[in-house]
Image 1 (tube, one colour):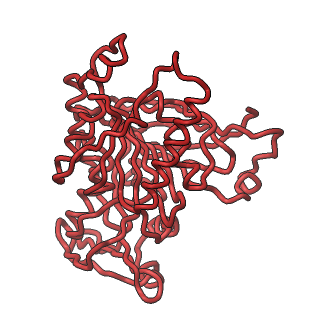
Image 2 (image 1 turned 90 degrees about the vertical axis):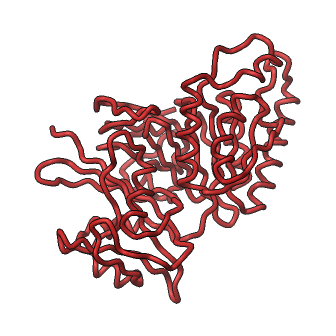
Length: 378
């Protein structure tokens, strides 16, 4: 099979009276009306593709919200995959450019009528037109060998690969939050991982002791309970502030931090966190009015996993029989190509992953050609 064409774009929307308006673009080459999108450049992360293409075609600098429906179709016999995100426009200005000769803000019913392709309507249908604020949990970038002593380990810096990862991470975080409150574990490898991002907008990194990794040998059950309570208190204050947040921490305490955030947001915590985030990867929790709208995972390699709350009738409609206890949902994905942190494109190949979670959650994946849900007993 021919290698897939990988593209990305966004549904740019703004509030209107009544409802919302959506920004469409006209391509004179094809004489069609569609959503802003375009092909990824060699070595480009999918998030950067989406933001670059929207800016080039509409002159709107997007801030990405939750991921939307991915579409797949054939172009002259080659498979094409387009990943989309929702983005609320903070300004009304839009202008045609980059092979686009016209842009139009249209009320939702008119936009759906104007679209040239039915799959674009499917993408818009997956949009939840709500203003969201991101809370981003980052695992630190690559660092040198682990030291034995706890004090010495806090001073372990990023290695050469980690420095490059931190620079790429700064670009990717900006896709969701051009500015944010940046907090970090006191560990040097954590503060160095998010410092390029903070310095990019003139910000600073706040050190929070609750984000560090405790000495597990000396930590009691009471200590762990206190730490979980402290994390819930931290996220409760962050959610109440209503501002974008980037928090850098460790593989060991990422599940506890995620559980604390989900608890504050009234969402079910993931039963397991498998596979763990690789170094430099991050989770985006999209929050609206104190509730979790979407949870997404992004790797520096360009592989993305998205989780959104599913309606209670999902198992019945998908033909999944009721199982005793809580079933585990596993997914099988086939990757159509990934980008390394250093910008080199790997040979396309099969990638599989499984993530056990409550049945009330459903997932979709970016950078895939197929995704299937199967149920199995826990």
